[in-house]
Image (cartoon, rainbow, N blue to C red; front, side):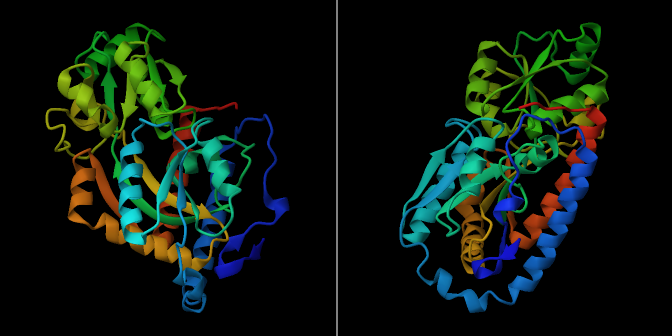
Length: 359
């Protein structure tokens, strides 16, 4: 590894991992490696803060052409509204178009690789969830390094999960669902937006904590998943509220519990998991913005500052909060620390639930 333009870490070609077909059975080892890398990244970032002023010319004319925002999910998913919102606000602020490029598939790996291999100039950005962290724990054959190949820019929001069921499921409460699932092993299935996603891990952890057996059905994003869920082709889903709020309100889906500490204002009649009888269940999601590693530090800081300004706008906060999303402004240093916390949390969940993924 060497220090690239602008002072950020840039991996050598030999640092990149080869594609393969092995799964990742050692979440604990992976978590320690991730924590080591994140600690190094955090220390380096602290040193580089003092060099930002020297790199100011790199951002003086940024951006002077359109910026591509890669979203590793299909159109219509839960990330789509915030991607469109950020595209709109950044375009207004920069005077240059921010174009959304949906690249779904392989648990976000396809779209994420596009950004890992993009020029390190700030004109290709990644908007993704904390799946970025879990993939590093679950897959040993990623075609990129989740830590070395990316520069954290800013977090956007946190989101709780709500467990929803198709009305055909014979349960109107969480306790009834657990009782039915225990009496009928593997009779129920639950969907996720992709193997290794936070909602996949949530389903596995729920199954372990509740003492039930259910079948996991992975999709290539939340859009097609929600369509099949409404048709009754899958039965359960740990969703972010924005993805399922309208069908909950119209009775096409039944909300059983949320992972929030207190009831959500947009779902006031839905109990928390603690209220519903399963305390300690707290898997959550967040969305953040990344750039390729080696992007000039001044450009990363410029984007991060602009994101903070946008997320502080009253209309932006209102739009996010109306969808059950909690605006969460976090600069690169704090985002790196958040990723380290998630690596520890999810590594434990993956290990205890014995989650194995093959690609």
